[in-house]
Image 1: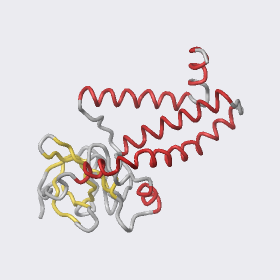
Image 2 (image 1 turned 45 degrees about the horizontal axis):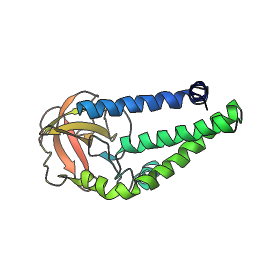
Image 3 (image 1 turned 180 degrees about the horizontal axis):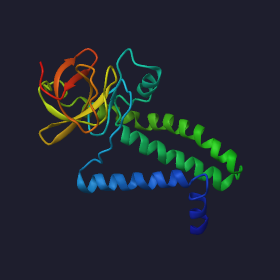
Length: 215
């Protein structure tokens, strides 16, 4: 395959989005390696999970929904999401690229195959990263029990209200941590608001926040 054929296949109508996402992933990791910083992306989602590190470990309660149980099946309660998604994206891109290059199944068939390829890639990623689970588990639980978050100040990374769970960023020294939180009184607390942790539910691993300290 010539360089021109490679570019044509990589940026075909089917593979263009995957190629762009893969390039952005490479840029993200280069940025992270060079600067040591993580890109701040606000997420406003109704999640019932707990993310406990800058790399995004998902902690799934026992009474979680089927979707979150699926995330646990993929070991995302141990493996950082950024690692998992990057490798899954790479495997998806490789599968789609080689199908486009050697099978020539047509535009729509190749496009529809991206979905099962992505699902298979997630399963392969789980298997590939499984030997590293002890390492990721150690990172996941490092210092987790020793920190007392009550009274700490943080900045909301998503909106929360009622029983909707949001994400809060707090700093332990220079290390950022992401906690799952809910509004203490059910009031709306928007993304970017500075709040205080005023209560916690140890069993569900959820903290309660308010814009003023109210114990």
